[in-house]
Amino acid sequence: MKIPELQQLAERLEEPAHLVVWEASGRIEVVALGGETFEDAFPLPLTVQSAGAEAGMILDTTTAARLELSQLPDDFWDSLLEVNYGEYLRVSMLGRAGKKYLHAYRAVREGASLDQKELEELALSEFELLQIARWMREQALFGHQSGEVIMDVFTRLRV
Image (cartoon, rainbow, N blue to C red; front, top):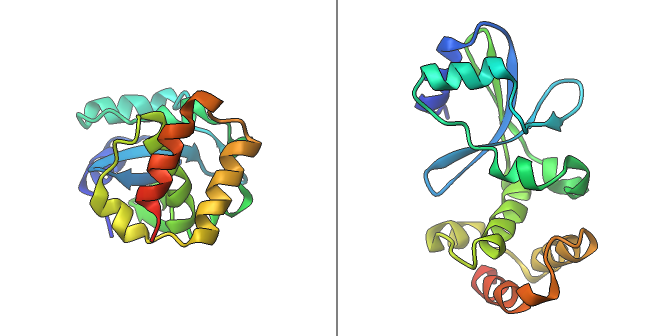
């Protein structure tokens, strides 16, 4: 499944780039840069930023700016879908494993505003919710004042 905006980006790149992205609520967010190992996507390399500007798109790196790659759980990278966009752009789309963490993280960070359809598509089990809660606690992503929002999000994420 190719994303038209990324195809436009690929047409403007002049050197190879490998982006790890997720699509949520109609936006594309760059989470990491690929290669031998995953690297921080914030800030994006100037060549990628320039190509994005020429394509008329802003490449969102909000999550990458807030989370260190070392904070992501081991199973975050499971089931990546690789897509090549021409000669210079390779994109790894996050699979369900990564999406479940980012959806929950973003929902808590943004005060529980989340697309209900995307939540239903995730259909998280209680075990998965426990994994997410453990990750948030172990990484101290949110303070105790976020407890009510976290409970609201987890209630909505529950199958």
